Image (cartoon, rainbow, N blue to C red; front, side):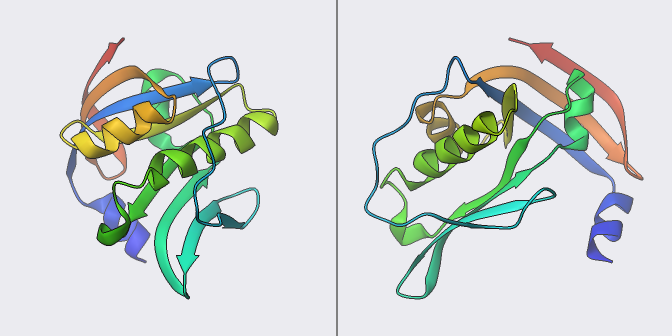
Length: 154
């Protein structure tokens, strides 16, 4: 029900879309935490727990509707979160790099991640993970449809 209500609301989107391909992907050094994942096909949750407490969570989606605005249908990373006390330890770039590697190894030609233009800390992590800015998108979503779409490719 929450998902339906979310699509009924009017929302302005002003984001960067980053992309990584198999040719661009390179494994990042291991971190001190154990990365786990759960789920298959539809959504895969990647997470790190420390002493039973979730310190990071990210989702890998098989595709995002927003990517249609740039003519793409590919796996996308989203809903990423790291606990405040664990930020600055390269957890976010490590996890999204591993997620992209898994998707690319499973046959995806490219993997995307969407970030709000003003989220500079996430942008730094995304770029550290090896993603390259692909496009900037500005649009308004009403009733699940995008209007006033402006796309600038890098």
